Image (cartoon, rainbow, N blue to C red; front, top):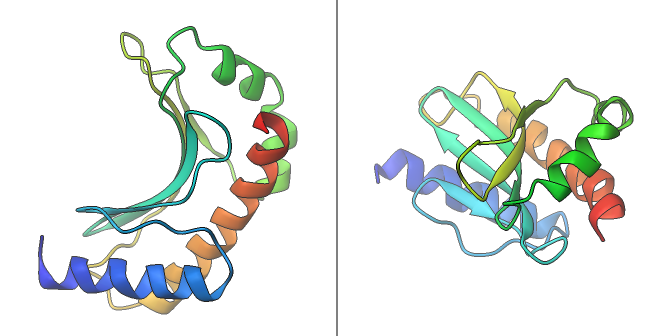
Length: 133
């Protein structure tokens, strides 16, 4: 892990904690939150030129969660305020829903990225939490 990436994750985790989000310890390129429901959690993943807020359904082999959420995608995207990427991930037990910003730790506009990520995470927590909880 580069020093910039590590610092980016640490600064974000501090801001998320201060905002009252249930943050867990950062990983190598992500910051997970406590689960919304069994097998489902929101996270921030970070690359040099991109950040993503993700809903990860780690136990969705039968696609039940994905289908439930995808059926309500217009309402979810309206609540979140952005178009989302819906990933079934055929052949895997995991499904995901993502919001993406084309900027990352290689850019120096971290404050704007962190503000966007905090806003998206809060919206993901509310929107998906009510549907999965």
